[in-house]
Length: 504
Image (cartoon, rainbow, N blue to C red; front, top):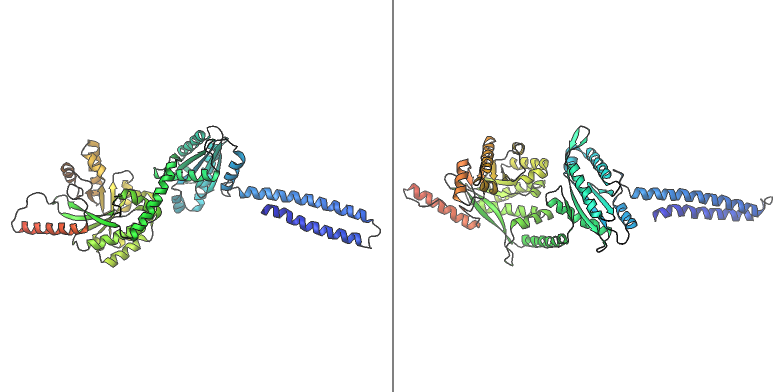
């Protein structure tokens, strides 16, 4: 519409102007020496030539504007608008149309660490790689940010397109050099297709590929995932669950239970870990492994996490000498407001900062180590301790442990269980404990369920043991009773009495 205006407006103005001049000349007495017919023919000739010239220039400008409107300025690839136009123009009834949506993994870190100029160069390098892989079978597009798309039309388009995407992932496994820098990034790919039996629009294709791409990210990244109708059903279920979580937080459906940790040698309770529970009105039990990821994705985890921290600090204030451990999610650690909010909670509740131990997982560090280190420095500034939870599940290295200076290492249950089954796992457990000792960290074995596992953890040098062998998670009222009974036993022993059985 805008392009047509650029051409039509000058033509209308010119037509009015020439019409006025022609009428004036025709009616003028001063041009009697020239016949009116000759003047009219001359005017029409000039007018026609001008119209032709303006038309060509206008059409050329329209074509140029159309091309600019369909081209990404950074990579000179077709953009999102071009993708929809190409599919509409090129796909015929009955054609198979396949679309891949590619999102670069860890690209934000490049921008954060090296600046947007290097980030833009990296985007251009990725676009060149994609163009080389796509020609001549497929077309690639840049949708914006670090998102690209590839389309292919024709027989077995989906099979060929998936092969192109897998080749691209293999190429990204090798570093990309830009000047003196070498970047290793990944990508997550979502694929969808329109077939003769199930024809869908380009917008729906793009939406489905986007859903499948996020499934690739959740599945571990660096992978291709085809869209499935189950994804939409799951998304609806997750949306409903998110709404229920918001209602649960507002209406007090969450409760905090506490699992004691015991000294490896004395079996005395030295700490408790706060564990969130959801008491739904219908009685259905939903574990934290189900609703915590939903809360993280929606951002509700920040509100839930602060509620848990405030509740746990309030409950544990009465348990003198007992350390309180609270789990912090990756989303909370990435929130720059969290350390300040934690400080406010400590001030409001009066809970001693040195008795608070925040547990984070290895994933928190891998996703954004710069932000994590900044937040942990502020947290330690309040006097709060920080522990690395679930150690042994895959990511953390000696470099991470030295960089973040944890006060305690918690060995994952899988490492403790496997250590009792084979020599390799046992050696891994022993080396982990030795490494922690060298770095000045305490060590806790979690998930201990048998006496053999407890004996192994104690012999290996763990300071604390946590697990069902000693205590399960329980309400705060039971923790108070348990600690009172333990104090009574200690008094009885000091008076010369005897206690049979374990301290549990």
